[in-house]
Length: 263
Ligand code: PEP
Ligand code: MN
Image (cartoon, rainbow, N blue to C red; front, top):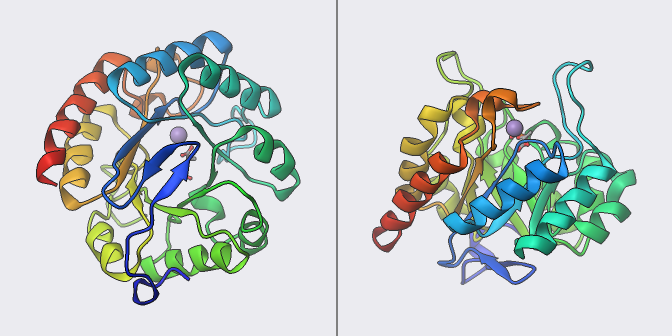
């Protein structure tokens, strides 16, 4: 049950030995999509050196257009595993179809359910049977209560290790890709014991807006951040405009870690 009323302590989610929640703060960083061995390994080494605790990378991509790059699929997961062996960083990747559960169970440490599938209830029930923790992203047009009910679906199927992610919602504002609802952090802290991570990359849509909102999310009490990093954003196959270079990520991570003692 996700309700704070039934839990005295904040949930600490253990992802292959890396903890999020209950005072444990982590940055999840990496490319939007895994593109090649060289790309994911270079980014993994750089984000690890900057202090990231987990490596993200999309292998099955939920793209608006069917003609856009759809991800390297199973091969992408294999490259993530290589990057994990190289750096020791646990890996985070999005699942879109329950038929891929055995593949994810074998290779992925934190299984992401993306914004577009937040209310795919059949998928939620199935990932609720997995042994791996789940990162549940808020839907593009879903309320905080709907996010919590989706977490309930996963937990009701037996998986209590759920991390929530605020990644921006659709509003009338078009200047940013989405509108980052930072108020979701303290609101969720009151309602649930589950950890909450903020993704300023997908919320803002532009690299230069990631740092101020990463810092704001940290001060608001987030248990972690998810930040897209690419070794060559101009050539990225997905989400280049919002991707930080490794040098930019170094700076953001440094600033964020400095805020932590006061968070
Ligand atoms: C992602 O994190 O790769 C992603 C597609 O994000 P979202 O589901 O929040 O759009
Ligand atoms: Mn992306």
